[in-house]
Image 1 (tube, rainbow, N blue to C red):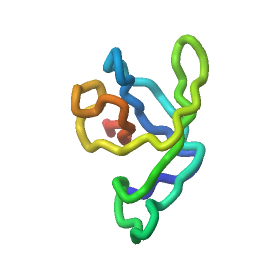
Image 2 (cartoon, helix red, strand yellow):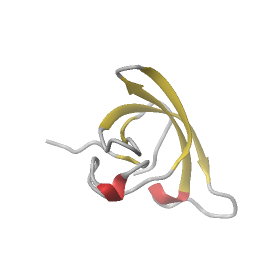
Image 3 (cartoon, one colour):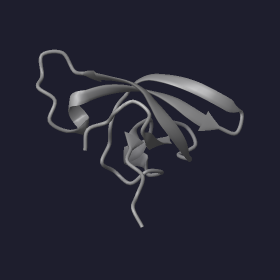
Image 4 (tube, helix red, strand yellow):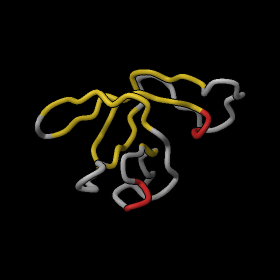
Length: 81
């Protein structure tokens, strides 16, 4: 899927591995590349933490399961029921 502004995604915290809801606030194709999938974009997020809202620029995508070590500091699509 292609990330777009306003979409809800999951963000895995770098230190705690907790998963938080986030809204995509900016989407930029990586320089010199034709965007095909999630890894071809740089995105910025507004992350919803219990302490408040945080802006996270240039967050990379990871297909790993949110909350795992491989997903640390990355965003991913929410799972589907």
